[in-house]
Each structure stands twice: as structure tokens, then as C-alpha cells.
Image (cartoon, rainbow, N blue to C red; front, side, top):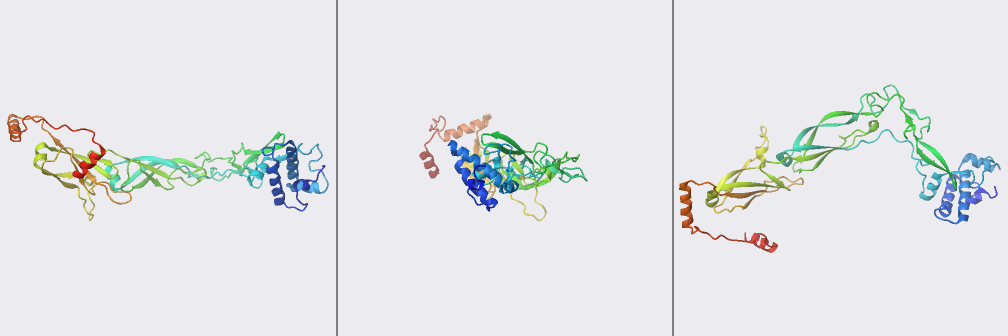
Length: 392
């Protein structure tokens, strides 16, 4: 060789492997064709790569130090027949070997991996979502195989080292380019990158280490959940391949429609219909609360209040809202919303002769035999609505 390999890398003859690698990294960053397109720099890069290939290999370096040809004299020269690893170039630019390279490879894939998360839907009643409940659910997920206990091999047998990649999980492929021979590493096709083979798979799980099974779980639904809320059950999802740790199970809440109440946030809304006479004269009625849907209290427990005495004041107009503080849905972080009852005044559609006579007499007393009515705009301004709100 026309030039000393140590001089090409700029290191002394007693330099260790780390010093040689460091020197190569520095030169590769300067001379690589992607960085320096100068033809002279490309030629220098070939020489530097060849020098590094020899000096980074203990056997080739020893042979070179004794004065021999590290390439066996088979026409090898700088850039001709010299095989340098693509991983070394990655190492030079990124400070570490490419996946699967020497001294920093990816290695075989683990057979044991974490399982996936699972998601199921659970329908609950509005009162259950509001006050909390414990529900029993059935889930179909992957569980650890009871025959092989996740190993994947039939009982009494074990995986064996792959004869193709010798346990590395990767095999090298060599391609020629203007830089010489470039070696890349790919997952071994024989063992699919695991580095081992299972000659006798478990018959129960076919070597996967897990099987499908139905389980029964109790899930605690906290008070205040809403439609779409997800409750997390840690490590209750799918068991991973090879008997790996289970993922999480998420229970997505679906709140069933209620016959009386409509939920908006933590507030409950309902409609109360009263006859025209009751709205005019005033009355009281028992309004059922959401607690009415709860089961009877156990012995020794306090019975919840299930109704509220709602007062309809004389002269109540249809559409009037009455707010009952603290009778809505409990919040997840404390507090409780309101119950808002909208009063709807029912006008009688059928009158007998006596009822009609009395109503006409009332209209005459009030001077309403031929009322003109009052016409208002249906779209008030924001300031107008605020004024009305402050004026009551």
C-alpha cells in the first residue's frame, strides 16, 4: 500500500480502538460524498474507510502491523474490494452504529412484549352516572396461555438458537457501490428477527403465548361521569405476546336517556306542566328528584330525599324557569349542579257549556272579551336580554 494506514487516519501505531474510531468519525464528516462532492475528497474518503476497516479489525490490524496485506493480495486496494460497514458511516455521522451494527446493534427482537390497550362501552342509567355505581362487566381479551405460561413452546421444550443468524436476529447483506462494498443489516427471515426458533410450538396458543378468554370484572364508576367518559382499569387489557404484561382496559360510559331529566353539564333540566287555573292561582306539587331512581337504602343507611316540594307562584307564566340549587349532578371534582324546572301552562282544549260560560264571565270581568294581544320581537339584542335579566 502506498500510504501508511495510521497516517491516513492521523493516529499513532499504539492508538486504541476508541481513538481510531474517533479519528475516522472526524474524517468521515469532512470527506463523505454527501458532504464534500469534490472528486479528490471522494478518493480520500475511500482510503480513509479502507484504513478504518483494517485498523478497527484486530486480526487485520495485526496482519498489517507484521507487514502483510490485510486483503490477502487479491487485487484489493483503496476502494477496490474493500468492504466497510454501512454502520460505520452511520456511526461517524450520528455518533453510534446503525441498527444492528457492531457495538450498538438492535439485536434480536424480544418475544415478550406489552399487550395492547382495550376499549369497551358500558351503558349506565343517569342516576348511576350521577351518584356512582359498581358494575359487573364481561370482557373478551387475550390472557396468558395456561399450558406454556407464555413461553410459546410446548411443555417440556424450549426455543433453540436460530441457525441462520446465530441468535443475532439480523443478517448482513452486502452491496457494491462506488464507495466499495456496503453492508446493511436486515431482520432474519428464518426467525423473523427473534434470534431463536420454536421447533415444537404450544398446541394451545400456537406459539403466541396467549389465548382468548372471557373474564368477569367489577368496574367502579365514579359519581359525576358523563356520556363519553372513560374509566381506566390498569393492566386489565390484552396480555402481550410471549406472556408479556397486559395493557390497560378503558371502559367508555354511555348514559341512557332519562324519561324526565335532560343533563347539560352538571345541571338537570325538566318540564313541569300545570293547568291554566293552577298557574293563575298558584299551587304546590311534588317534583321527583333524580334520587328517586336510586335503590332503597340498606339498613342503617340514610334514606335520600326523593322529592322536592315545588311552589308554583300565582300568575306564573308559561316558560318560567325555577332553579332548585344543588339538586343536579355531583361534579367529578366536588360540588353539585342545579335542577332547573321549566313551567309549561296548559290551556284547556275542550270546554263544556258551564266551563265556557265561566271563562267568558271571567274575560268580561277582566275586559278581555276581544283582546288585541301584544306583539314583541322574537330576536332581542344581547343588551335587551341582559336588561330583562336584571329587571327580573
